[in-house]
Figure 1: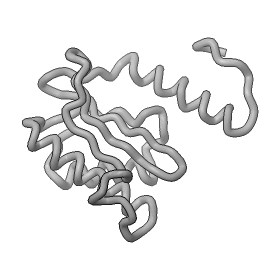
Figure 2 (figure 1 turned 90 degrees about the horizontal axis):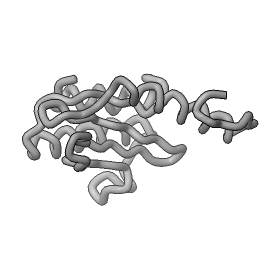
Figure 3 (figure 1 turned 30 degrees about the vertical axis):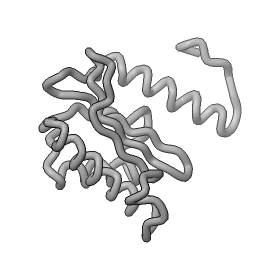
Figure 4 (figure 1 turned 90 degrees about the vertical axis):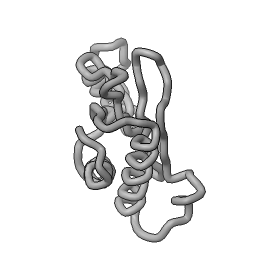
Length: 127
């Protein structure tokens, strides 16, 4: 298999497939000072969004379901992802970021990933 991955089974295979897709995406997607990268990391329980300037190697803004303002919030995981998207957009705008490049992290653009992206767009972040 490509990228030095062993043949795996079950959850390990899924994680390896996500990793391969993320590597393939990162070949083309890179954040700059003008348009940093909005990267989304998803686990079974939580979701994390970061706005990263890849040229400097700095995280400009971040939000997750582990933040005190969102933690223990009402609703399902998609509703929490919407809150994370709105919060990361608010923090990015406060850091002076108007437009970003979206990096879905190898995950499908559906469900929680799409909910986060839509909420960030509604909050005024362009991508």
